[in-house]
Length: 455
Image (cartoon, rainbow, N blue to C red; front, side, top):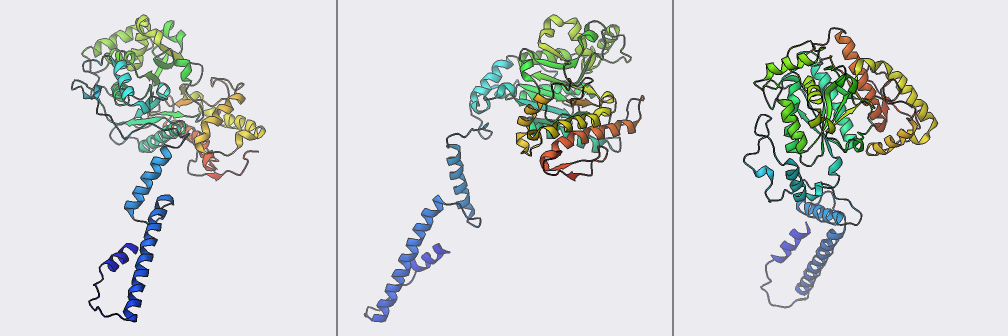
C-alpha cells in the first residue's frame, strides 16, 4: 500500500499557476511533508524487514528472500551440524556416467565397486560422515493385489511396522513390488533387488533385507554393527546344523545384512547363478537335494543355495559370513508370540522401579533410552527362552498375501498371531505419542497413557 501511495504522489500534475498564494503554499508544504514522511517510513520499513521476522501476510517474493537469508545465517551458525546435501550433484563424472553400467543381475559383473563407491563419496563429502554405519532396509511384495482377502491389509501393517522402526533409528527404506529379473520369482527376487539398491545407494554401507512377513518386535534394539565389522554378510543360523547335519533349514535367508562392497557383488552373482534364470537351474535343484536330505522339493531355492556355498565354498566365502544366533536376528513366530504378555509384564516391572525409563520423551530420543534399557536387560537372556523382546518375529509359512499357509496350522492361527506381534510392536511406538493398545488382538482401540505410567 505504501509504495502505491508514493507512486501516486510522484505522478501528481505540476501546478501551472505561478501566482503565489498562502493556500497554494500551504498545500504544497503539506504534500511535501506527507511525501517526505512516507519516504522516511518506507526506508525504516525496508530496514526493519531485513532484521525482523516476516509477517505471515507479507508478499511471497519477500518471504522467499527472508527465508533464504535466514537459512544462510542458520547454516553458518557455530555449532550446527550440516546433514547430507541432497540438492547438489557435482558435474564430475563417476560410475553413473558409464554407458556399460547395468543394474540387472544377469549382466556382466560389476568390477572395482569399492573404488567407485569411494570416488562417489569423495565427490559428495556431505555423505561421508557416518557412511560406515549407514543402513537401508529393503523389503517388498508382489505388484498385484493379494489373493487372500486380508492380505493387502496385513502387508500394509507389516510395511508400517518396518517404516516405524526405520524412522526411529534413522534408516532409509526401499519397498519394491516389481521383479527386476522376471524369471527370478518368489524368494529369488531378493538378489536382483539388493544389487540394484547397492548401485542406487552408494552412500550406504549396509543393505538390510527383511522379508515382508517379518515383524520388528523390539523397536529399541539396534543392530550391533561393531560385531560385524570384519564381515560382509550376516545371516541367522546354527553352525552345527550347517556343517554337521547339512540341513537346508540351518539358516533363514528371509532376513540378512549385506555390506555394500565388491565382495558382495561377486557373492550375489554366484548365489544368483543357482536361480531360475540360469540354464543350470534344474541341475542345481538336483545338487541341493543330493546334499540336503531334509529338502523335500526339487527346485533350487535361495536358502539351500546359501547353505551350499557355506559348505562347498567355505574357503572362498565363509570367513566373511557371520552366522548370528546370539539374539533373535529373526525368530520363528510359533515359538515367540505366546510369550508377549509375559514379556510386557517383565518390562513394566522394571519401569515401575526406574523412573528414568518411564519418563516421557520425544520419539527422536528413543535410541538413547533404548541404550539405558540395556543396563536392566542383562538378566533377560538373548531372546532364546528368555524374556527379552525378540528383535524380529518372522511369520515363515503363514503366506499372508496368498493365504497358502503351512497346513500344520490354520489361517486364523497365523493371522491372530501376526496381529498380536504387530500390536505388541505398535505399543512400543505409541508410548511416545501418549497412547497404548489395551488388547493385542484389537489394533483399533487405544487408551491414553497417564503421566508417570506405569508407576
